[in-house]
Image (cartoon, rainbow over all chains, first blue to last red; front, side):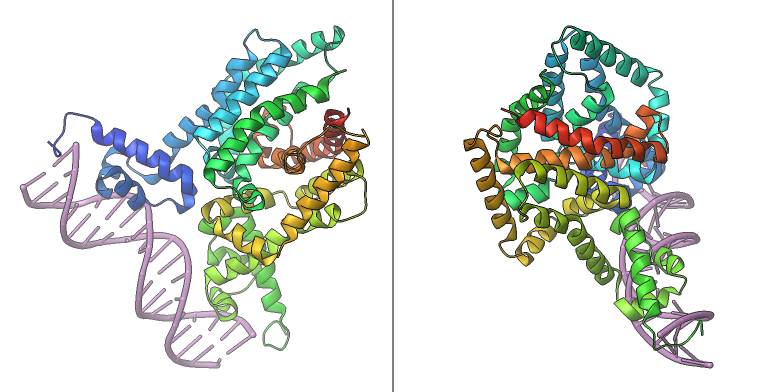
Length: 207
Length: 207
DNA sequence: GTCTATATTTCGATAGAC
DNA sequence: GTCTATCGAAATATAGAC
């Protein structure tokens, strides 16, 4: 039963393989042959299921964009305090990139090649980005008025949180070399960093 | 005199073009034809001067790596105070990425594809990374003892500075869309951010 | 040194048998 | 649905004229 049909097993295997290869190598360097081999099937089948490399890439890219951004909105719209949201976003982002280390470079590299993808994606999300920023800024304003934190622009705060959480994984080869770490050591450092990043941001916001 | 020789004008034009095309598109997506067209010459000349795409890329990549890292060492080894070094690194990094916005993604993407490049480069620099970190950590220790700043690991501090300065440029398409900015607006925001990032870091370090 | 023409290889895509 | 074989386009690299 390694052959024939019924089951959409091959399609699933292809999607898993495509996700891996595209994410690791990027669109331009990814080869249909790589994906087929990774999926354990023939190149022709890729076209049977997905017609072209471009269409396959579109599917994978949208999926990965969603993976990258969806957690953030959920936390922002939750009822946590500002401080707890900072902690939650750092926790979420670092966990995400430990689980998917190549995701940030993949997303950012492909967005740089085709920024329109970001605009399309934002429109697909309706007014979510605007609502998110409003929710966050309102909450910051309240906390500032109660003298719980210093004033800061919500957008800048988000950029700071994501920078501190995600950039180290983008610069991973650099950090591993300079700190003389292997993959295990790097991940251990990043797990420890969760706490340090949250504290660092919170310290900077204390009045 | 648009033709014939003597002058190494063509070689220079090719290097400039290669730098631009490789940095914007990355190795895999860059085409020899793109580079030739950008340089205003024929594809065959690229091979005459540089033999292959790989050799050309090596030259450009090393050059750009150096461009990316050289400023940092200079500041670390200077005689500025810790606080002034933080300001100087932020200033330097943000200026650098405003001048060369595609540099960080280029470096990080290609390093991810071939981490060995980082190791080679670090060896080429001798013991510079180690010396750099020692110098910084000693200076931090002294400042902590004098109660001028809180304790922090030098490596973590450097990661934080570079994250806050460089990541926004890696995430540029994302930020432009979410903040509804054009390129001018984005750069204006980043220039303003110089001060904010330095303050943010320094606030987090105040005892 | 520079160009045109062409060789060579690689890759995405399709045809057709099973 | 899956495979083998092959087409045709694109991309790197080289040969050879000027």
